Length: 474
Ligand SMILES: Cc1cc2nc3c(=O)[nH]c(=O)nc-3n(C[C@H](O)[C@H](O)[C@H](O)COP(=O)(O)OP(=O)(O)OC[C@H]3O[C@@H](n4cnc5c(N)ncnc54)[C@H](O)[C@@H]3O)c2cc1C
Image (tube, rainbow, N blue to C red; front, side, top):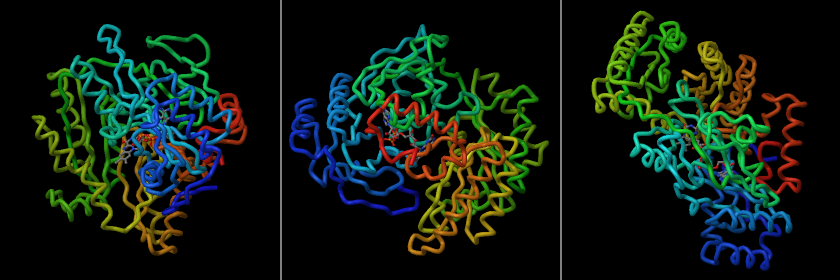
């Protein structure tokens, strides 16, 4: 079993994928120039944002669904592992071939096939970055809401396979809420179609929902039909400081009774604030124990009115140093603080165990309070920030990569935090998925009968277990 933390690397594995006749066949399918086998060329495809190394035996770049199908038919006949890869910026090792075999890069499948402004959908291939898709639909006055912070690097296929979230989740949901239909190649090379082009579609099982978050274990997405919305005319952001995380997080439930649905609600704790100030000196208030950033979108007048209401609610609930944006530039400035967190945190350690637990948002204050207790009990520095509006908190336990005892303590903190999140009615991952990094904890979040159903589904889609082995179920 592979587990998180860290610096694992494996020599290049040898499976049937390395057989010369298999490599030849792969070259026949996609063209020799689209198959990499040289160790130095395949190495970058053996890692993702977890930064551990499991080099594949070959990397193959198909351009069409037909080529994808032929590759999978070959893999299923010869029985070797196949791992799909998008932008390779996943946080749980999903795109990494831990058992060797081939990596299928979707980079060449990066076309937009159709944009329908009338019917509010876009059809595209999986290898498009989220950013490129958003730019393309924006030209038609349309919005594709899912916005993982990795949007400039992550691919639509990777976003769907991870069911990625982002800042705008409180109002627009996660990636699955914007997926209408998919074309998928299964492990046996069958090409299946799920859903369609309409929001309403209740014909048959919801295989589209099943594919969202399936982490490359059930099939490889070769085309996606995604839901679009009209681009809001304006956005505004309000940022406030609070004496404590508890006070900041208690405000999360105060907006809806006033009829407000903010687009984003992000929280930052005192340890993050300290790190940001040391690195960037934004001049945040010294007495700030937490920062809450709230954003709204819609028509200009409505946005202004809503932003004023938010300002008032923050003030009435112990917020201070409250700043409201009046222009795009001011808005960007307010968000700079949020963007500064990740690069700043490394001052607290050489290794960051970054988890992304989720709880019902009313439980966020309790979650944070108890995580701080866990950190203290294990003498481990912890910094919390994240998408508090949907209960998804990024918990960062800091340790020293050369000190195995500090890593052991941080691992214990991670385990206790996972259990705590489940106990509070939440789960062990809000958006980063399971991969191999969290596979050992899956049964904390999912009971045995449910796990058995999931394993049965995997068997139907992938009878020989060639798709992304070593992930999720171990
Ligand atoms: C700086 C940074 C910020 C991030 N911020 C966020 C955030 O705000 N929200 C969030 O949710 N995540 C975030 N992430 C995590 C990550 O970016 C997301 O999980 C993203 O969706 C991964 O996309 P990718 O294209 O890089 O996928 P990859 O890492 O390449 O692959 C992820 C999984 O998808 C599978 N896969 C890829 N393509 C396909 C396909 N075509 N068909 C089937 N399976 C496929 C892979 O096998 C793998 O299991 C962040 C990561 C970083 C490094």
